[in-house]
Length: 167
Image (tube, rainbow, N blue to C red):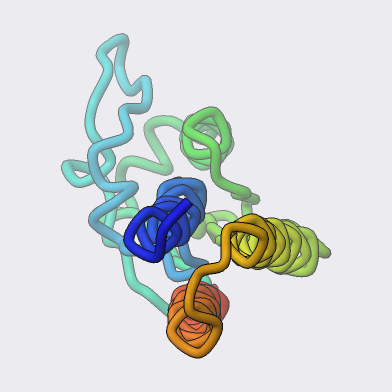
């Protein structure tokens, strides 16, 4: 293995980590993300944006009805809204008779996701160090190899830090 091959393999390890972390979404939820979820109202499936106001408050989204008449006409609507949002993969609960609150993460989920990200980063670092180890056996310039290793590990650290900050 020469230096160029080693650098390419290290870059592949960084790319694999990036692809693994791409599927992990941050903790912030946008009101627009839930506005297209449909709920049953008067026998029809209606998007939430036609029935509700959505407002981001810290790490939650508050969903309230445009018109209180809807609640009088259909007292079970808030329960169905919470159920539809939960069915879309979010944590939602009826906060009051006219408001549903959507949380972005379940209790403890952020720690689990952070732990997974850190494990994936450590796997990438190990892969990079293994490339360095193999290249050393083939008498590759050690200073250049160490410089490439440090650069790849630094890139892993930057990617992981950005992802953790996004949680």
